[in-house]
Image 1: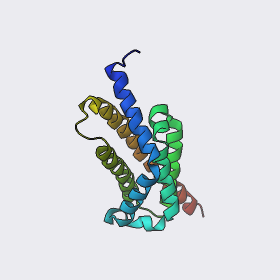
Image 2: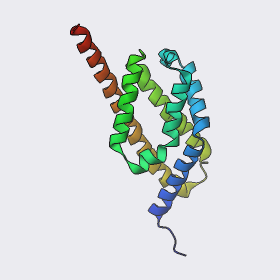
Image 3: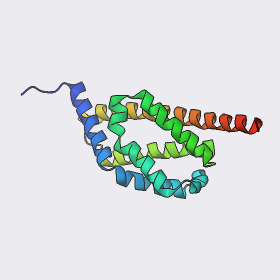
Length: 163
C-alpha cells in the first residue's frame, strides 16, 4: 500500500475536518443562532425569522465542502447577493450583516479548534490549508452579500425616485 505524500495527507486531514463540520452543521447552526440573537452587534437580526436564519447558516456549514472544494464562485455569488438583498429588505444594517458573517466564521473556528487537539502536529498543515480555503470563502461571502445589499438599496432608491 502506497504512503500518502505530506500534501496528500494534509488535504485528507482538511477533507476530514470539512466532513466533520458538515456532519455537525445543525449544532453549529444552533450555536451561531444563539450568538447572533445575543450579540449587541446584531440587534436588528430580531427582524429575521429565526428558522430562516437557522436554515441559511445550517446550509453554509452543511455545504462547506461543496463551497470550498468545488469552488463554485457563481453559486457563491448568487447565494450571497440574495442574502445581502434579503437582509436589506428586512432592514438589517449592513454592518450587522457583515458581523453575522464574521460570527459564522468565528463559530466555525471555535469548533475546529475544539475538535483538533494541539498535539496533532502532523495535521497542522492540513488545518492551515483549511484556514486558507475558509478565509477565502468568507471573504467572498462578505463581498457578495455587501454587493447584493447595495444593489437592493439602489434599486429601491430608483423605484422611489420614479414614483
